[in-house]
Length: 267
Image (cartoon, rainbow, N blue to C red; front, top):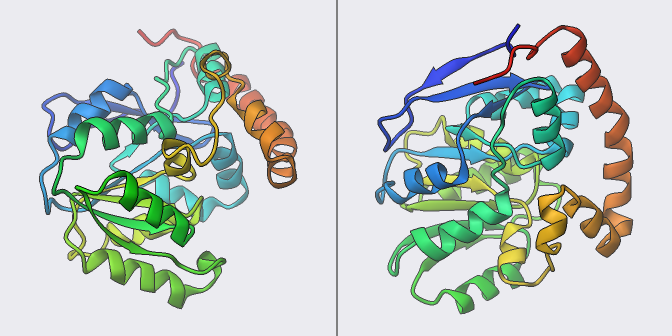
């Protein structure tokens, strides 16, 4: 039996259909990083708004405990796997999920897709990040907003972010204030006819790009241990997230496996 919820999409700027599958209760698009970059490279200025999410273990567990969040992922233009553990678990169920990490995707977009003169709207976690991006990429025009902490729980502040992004005409939108607030803003914007560009919900990816935070060595990333590297660097902030995610993730996997989903190899 195959994994449930297979749908075919006709994404923007490509003639190939992309398969979307549900795994661990969250949708994933079977598209690799090269194809995503190719699709983004063909995205023109002032195109209709769409957004990309990069669910990882934390996202999957959070959706399990808060079902309304699922709409943010279902409505995304692309939902790509940002987790080696999830990719491995999927493979055990016969489902191939290409790994497209938010950090690597963001780096490639900034370095090889964005052109001098492009307009980027940035919703940032702090003013230092905005300053550093402008210094690092002076040929790109950044319109930025730095919302206060707790924007998700304050509808008026979240709406300010939505209004700011919708009122700007940009090729890309970087939502860099963490999950699920970035996904929430993107979801609301997708229903606003004024909004343009492709939004990337990218967490701390810009900080890695600027080397304000150090990424794990390549070998750790390849074997799925980037989470351990981040935990060592930021134990006070991350230990609860990682520890409390293990049991719910395993429960979701057991349920997926026990239902017989994915027993047929996905060729």
